[in-house]
Length: 361
Image (cartoon, rainbow, N blue to C red; front, side, top):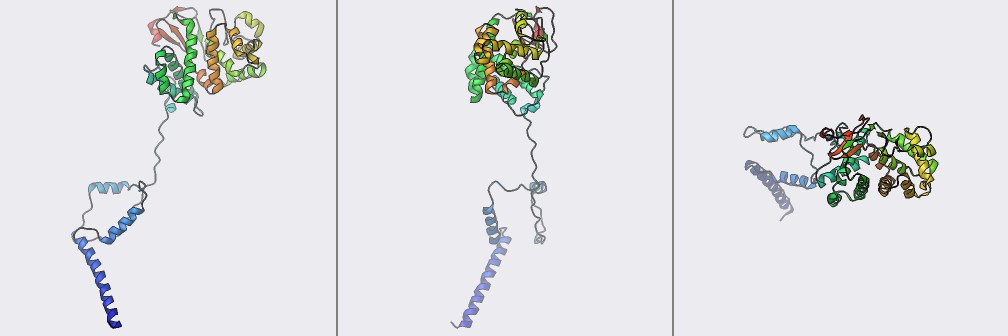
């Protein structure tokens, strides 16, 4: 074929191809189908997307889509370009309030009545106490919740396995130590009291102030501060109880007058003076050189006392924040009708019969 004729044929073929594609697109539009080029472009754009990362449509577009497509006059096409889809600025969802932020310190916590509930209370309390920078209100509430949960479990040894199994592994030994201490302290109260004590319940000194006194006792006499705190906790709930023991002991560290005369200095009811006197006494009986079991036995010569104080002290040795929970423990008195909470402000100059109204307090 002559060269001129070849060029003419090629030009004709090219025009025919363009016409075919154009007519195909027109036919597609007439039949309600998308042109092939639009489909290819859409497919390429779709394949380039990252799954799950498509920006949400603006609310107005979502509303229009819900109302159905906009109708256009038959035979007319819009020449205006489609408006760009601009995703709305990201909106940060408000953080869910933590359990600690929902605390009402005026509410007295009540122990759960099943193992799963007790495990949840213990987990919540222990984690809140160990959280960074809890507020005083949070520490007061969660320390109290921790206490009532452990007291309830103390009376139900058959729940131990179920509660431990529902706790995180790191909290199981914490639970075991606190419950064991509670059971040791319950030994002398196998027969609950029928009368309430002649005590006055006061606010303790702040946790930081008391800890400074314990640490001073450790620095001067070598008795670990955690053991001084554990004695203070066991004897009077960190100084909340003002009153005489059955043996005539008094003050936040419960000294009898004859022992105070030898080891005390200053005011037997002053937390600083009493804590230093306790450190002096424990050191004189081996506590300053590591023989803490002997020192505690001399402080109160019964094995259950030594075991309980040691259990509490070792929890603070393992994690010093345990002290913050213990500082919030309240005064409960075991009676024949049940545990009675003796709140700050309780005062009785003589023993009296416990009544159902005391339980419902």
